[in-house]
Structures are given as C-alpha cells and as structure tokens.
Length: 233
Image (cartoon, rainbow, N blue to C red):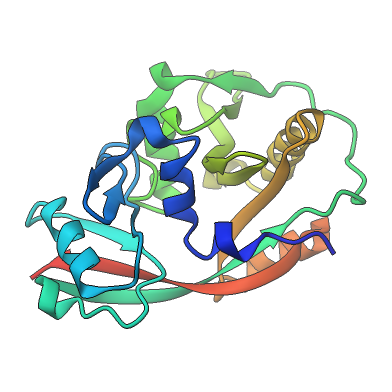
C-alpha cells in the first residue's frame, strides 16, 4: 500500500507551513501558525514547553488553534490549555483505484465566493473553513440550476510537495443523497493524478458514516493521530 511518510505527516501542519504554504506562515521561534482568517491550525517544531511558549506568543486571548505532535510539552507551563482532543484518521487514495468518468457541472470557486463557501461548510463543520481558507488550494463547487446557489463543494487544504489534502467536502442538507460530494472528490483525484500528486484526507475517527464512505470509495487508512484544541489560559 502507498504510504504517507511519517516525517511529513505526523506534524503535517508544520510540513505545509514550511513548504507550499510558507507564504501564509506566521512564525515565532519554534512555533508557526496560519492567519486566523485562513485556518485554525498551528504547529511546533519540537515537542517542548519552550516551543509552546512561542506558540502562545502568536495567539490572542479569545482564539483557539488545533495542533498535533505535542509530545511531553506542558501546555499549562506555557499559559495554554488543551480544551479538547480528537482522534483523526489519515487516509490515502491508492493509485490503483479506478476513477469514474467526469461529472458535468463542477465549476472552480475563487475567493469572490468566500462568504458562500463559509456558510455552506459551517453547516457541516463550523469554524474550520474561514474567509481566506480559499487561498490554501483549489476549490470547486456544484450550483443549483435554478438559483445558482452553491449546494456542494470541496477542495484542497493542507498541501505540500507531492501531496494534497482533500477537504471542505460538503453538501447542503436540501441536496444530499445525489452523490455530489463523491463527484467533487473524484474531480480532485483526477486533477491530482494528472499532476502526479497523492490524494489524502483527514476524517474524525468517530465519524463512522464518513469513514465507511471513504473506505467504500477505495481509500485506505494509514494512521490515527490526535489533534489538540489549544486555548489561552
């Protein structure tokens, strides 16, 4: 099975911010983060309390970030608190999975549609997609033929050389059951293969419906990691 290399993927936010997304990185010492308007993700280069102290310098009192690879670092000593932790699965689309024919009606989305994109994703996973998340990669949507309303979307979030995370896949509740999310996922997969890029994604381990769907589509689970929601004390 094709793998997601541990050196890149155990601290995937750091990898993205040190490579493809370096233009978006806000850094202090051993800590780095995305701008709050882009994504609620941050990373530390080493799992130490000192590195967490550097991260604390990048946060305002009223915000939170998600981070992984904390190791034995002590958030309390850095004036931070782990508000909650979740297990997420990293999954990969193997190259032998056959892709279905293209679906007509999928159109590119740019940041001029950011408000619509945020509104749609807030129904499924509020707080993760923000007004500048559209700058992280390429996004695509399906619109209602009657109103031109954005009814389904998906795109790329955490990206670095050779790998692009599929993310933001969602459909408005009034239009579910039509296979739109799968059509968008395959659209992304075709683009990635044409560019020699590996498609991968994150899914919450407890979301059995989503996990089973991705397995049915041919994705394979590589590993489980823990994400921590950090807030300022």
